[in-house]
Amino acid sequence: MKRFFLTTALLIGLVSCIDQVSLPIRNETPQLVVDGLITNEKPPYNVRLSYSGSFTFDGETPRDVMVRAANVRIRDDSGHSTALRETQPGNYQTTDLSFVGQPGRTYTLEIGLNDGTRYVSQPETMQPVAPIDTIYAELNRSETDLIDTYRFFFYIDTKDPATEPNFYGWTATSYNVQGGPREYCWVKTQSPGLTILADQAIDGREIRKKLVIKSPIRSIGPHFVEVKQYSLTKEAYQFYRLFQEQQSRTGTIFDPLPASVIGNIRQENKPEQRGLGFFRASAVTVKRIKSYREDVYQPQLQQYLTTLMANGRQCCSDPCFSELKIDPPGFSE
Image 1 (cartoon, rainbow, N blue to C red):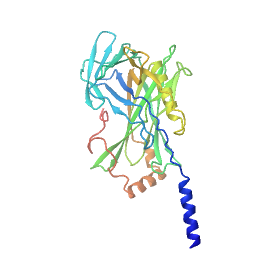
Image 2: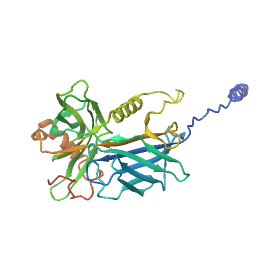
Image 3: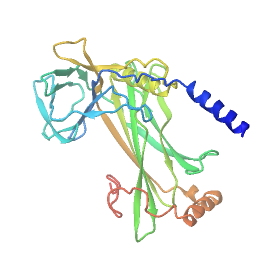
Image 4: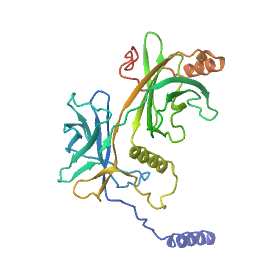
């Protein structure tokens, strides 16, 4: 009995020594975030608007608030302009099919918010871009990834024009068939963000073996890959380089808040008041490849795919591209 009272007294003493500490939740003033792009491809062109800066406690992730009912317009240096219509909360899209981006033209984004605040982007001149020469794949086996052990690594080669600085960006999308000949689907994989490159070390030479996407192999069947090669202005390249460097850094919640990467968005009447993000004007070239690689029948890969089928991984439970028998855009070209 004496031991019980001693233990109880000790626990009460320990509890009484615990002081509740209120940790301050770091908050930033919400800022306008812009993600916009105009290219020389056929319209429509899209601009995404949100607010950022408030932190939630569940994972310390920013809570973005979409900007509704804004007046958004793209203007070029020849006096033409086009309005954008809000198609989804915070997503704005051009509707004028005659307003097409052209290399050599300079473009500006104009944004009017409900409170009367107006933002404009710094002018972006659309630079020309070289065509992609070739796309090719190499089979890669991961020793650590137990879900997607085998992948095709897709690379591109392209010739860099000489005598002037060039800045590049790439995005890629791959589609892999799953299912059988009677009922099948295309499972889509997209490259994570924009891959960038400056040509100062290779001016006028060939860009070789630039990795653009890692496409998982989940069935015996074709891979269809589309690669887009973009021109970037020096300012756009610097923005994306700094943004990607910041995203790759690690730290704790007690570290100082990272400085915002300055983009090309500012208030019209108060240039010192900046928005976040970037409005980009890029020329783009597109190249596609249908890959019916013979090495999918290599013994180790055949065994791997057989295991997937036995585990039910080859069915169309993953998100498919549109409906089951709809081929991806450009597949039949």
